[in-house]
Image (cartoon, rainbow, N blue to C red; front, side):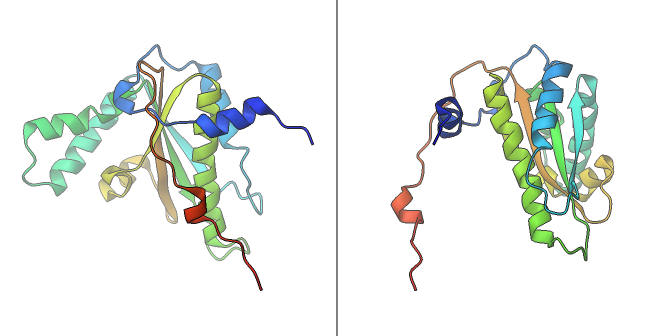
Length: 192
């Protein structure tokens, strides 16, 4: 058996960065291509590609921030100017944000659950690829992944949902480690 220690080490040490700590320079077109290609290499029962990507970079991040400001204000009638500014600047935290959109083909032989899991695997592959490329990354959903005004601005169609907003940038600080589950607490062996 051959073990790629570099790959195993990457998987065992991968850690999300906080979007607030990400800096430029911008993610290059070549880096974006690698991230998208890594995302598209996930298990995909039925070859449905039950996901798609929406990229936010440059000025588009601020423009989409206005969508977030309006959506937040529409649902939070007590939102103050500081909160609205926070939401408007959300995508400016990182040089690149990629929305991974789950697209389920209903009543297909591939169960909906498997299609949804494939979209989750896309997000994870992109995070692992970012780590291998020396980039900082974070997978977020938060309120705006579930907001109908945001869905409309993203052009979500029937049977689509946001699997995650993936933030990418350059690291400015080391990632903090967090406690991980004790494997014995979450593992059982099935016996007849």
